[in-house]
Length: 539
Image 1: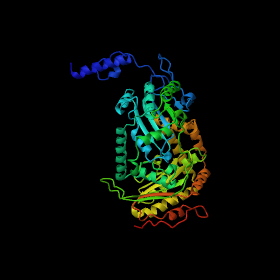
Image 2: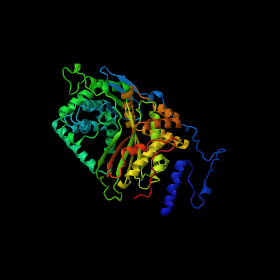
Image 3: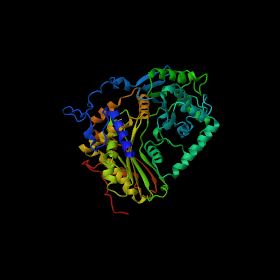
Image 4: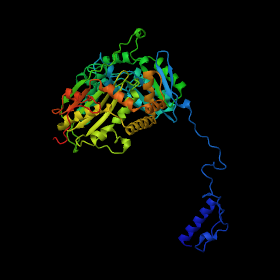
């Protein structure tokens, strides 16, 4: 018997076993004519003998579907005896994210050498009283599939871990150890000092300028106070910060009333018990006998917006092997509102409407190619390499700014172009661009909140600022309420203040601060900014 015949017989037997049909008779090629029983006719209107997908499969147990319950998305908050707040929210999945959000950042370093929070980021998740070395702590996290990170902003410091939810007690202990009981040995501080010095050196060698420029624009906006203090450790302070300075800062700022321990993907009851055990019952490194009568010394001053100019003449490094020219960077900003202000949502919609990005961004409307900084700036002026809008919101103020980059010879036109685009925010708003900006902001909000670590940070920051968490549906509805009149009102409110300007690179052609400010005022008709026209053909 040939190999082909063997395969035919094997195939026919498999088909018979699968379909419950008798074997085919071979000898003729017309196999379909040799079936002993004709196929059963299909029900009227059906194309398959199988039941439709809208009906359950027969002889199977009923399916139990997951249901969306409001309590599953409710943030529970408990305040412990010492004022420490514990917040948690359930979320489907085996892993959880837990961490500590602290009201601590560079804005509180008025009475200290600037750069302490930069050091604390490098010292995070090091040796503690419980874990003798960093490696021992990391091994404990790895037992539960965990990772850890520490990040700081100008007014908040976040310690976070993500791990298997069955190891919740272990990761809660780790968080308590790193925030309240670090060893801060001389070797660790020296290693952090070297890491900070290396990072400062690296920043001067990188073509990316956002980190430095954000420090500069805040320094220009809030000169010498609170948010104007540097987030990056100044070079002159690298060797001034020691263990005593850091412990003094921690003793004053890492207090229970300034902290929120938050988690996503855990049960609230057990989590509160673990926090009580490791954060309250066990004392911090800096605890002494007279700690009960100790009163922390905290800078409670409100940010004072000043406006002004910060500039640094230097040579911006180039990308290796790139044909990109040398660029000069300009940031122009205005005072906006705090995250608790009624105009906060309208300011966020305006930020989306301005949008922007790099000249090499690809994509459609979802990438912001229809925002104002693309259509009015990047698409019209070939020499513009970047134009991006930012909105920084804090507890008592905010900063709205646009970062632009162009060749040094175009620094004059770049600054005036950005200034006029900011002034045009107070002009008319088209219905289509408003609808697009609102939809983009809503989709970005919901997309980000699909990630568990983002939900954790949102829970921690909101509870720290307000004592509770507003659900995403609240912000979706608030975004939907924004009108064109709201955008124009917010823009005029910002333009009524003195601007702030930060510039870095070769600045020979940078216009004066007065010229920039003059181009940000509206004409009497309030339809176009004043100032001279741009010369598109000037070299």
